[in-house]
Image: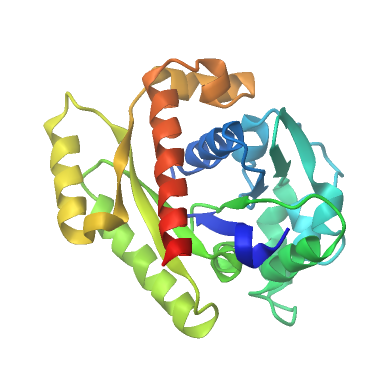
Length: 268
């Protein structure tokens, strides 16, 4: 499979926690896999919620994305089958908590993930149409590695009062990475999460974000939905936990939008 022709690496990033970043990573990945795309979710968050949300046990001593970043394992060797057709996961462990200090001593410390993905693509193993990188909720060296490796950034944005304030900091970081480390980096889109149509604030935030970012904001909004909150405790994406709920349907629509935007880019 030619990376240039078919593979896209999307960093799912927001330096603010609790915005639905990991939920978006696993459910967008599941929705893309459901329509036949081969997807790899790379868990680069020490909390490992993307791993456990896909039902992958995080065991002490197992090789993880930490070992890939510090050069102790190949990316291909740590990839786990999620049990969901077309969807694999490169899990994290708590070892990632100390990775930033260790990475500071490496050459190409900002390119460790990029180099690992390129080696994966150059091997004889599984190739992927989409690689989704679940970033930690901070703008640290792990996130910079993700942005350096990525073709584009997908930003989950919670519908709350300070949403735009946090977003501006992330956009500045993306611009700095584009200027200094990764000139191909773009914003794939901003997805509004935890939208409550009964709350006028959610609607106001949505209007404000759209007025600032225009078409960068996806039409799809992810609702505040109890089934989305329940699904991780069962180690399953919400699309498998309750396919018919509003949250599942929203992620299916989001996947369609992502694919549509990618096709438009390829045609340009």
